[in-house]
Image (cartoon, rainbow, N blue to C red):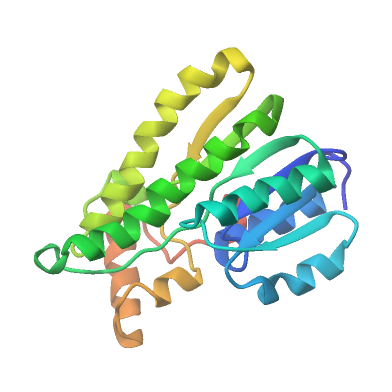
Length: 223
């Protein structure tokens, strides 16, 4: 463990697996105190056991305002002010646009847009000066891929909001940035609605349109 982030407080949503989990682990490795939030709190048990004095586990759903308010309340009650907020929770589904009815669109926007923005907004009064908000978007805001119109649109909304919030919150000493990962090998790819046999084909198509090689690793985003 290094001590680069000693006495810093970070919040990571969607922290039970993938990029969120790796980001939370990296914060811990750097000495920070971390509030981790996910629907599956049991998956965070070993993370809490790793550093019980520096980890707060809160179970909840980013689409439920009461859950987010509880996350803020428990985080500030345990650690005080916050230095970094990472609204990472997200959902992606491969659905042809012709089949994307209102419910299908709302499902992804409620998590990827409303959930992310409300997480940042509710923590705003608790973010210390020189603190930061780091959104997670996707390379798909720049490259079109069939079946991911709704997902990419939701992430494009966050990408746009990031620029506006960076200007709006700068006078308060709060930085706002977004990381747009390329294809990363995380559990989200097994949940997008494709059979397992098709995932390899997706990986090949995506990487061939962007760069040679295979899916990246969550650690490259956490770094």
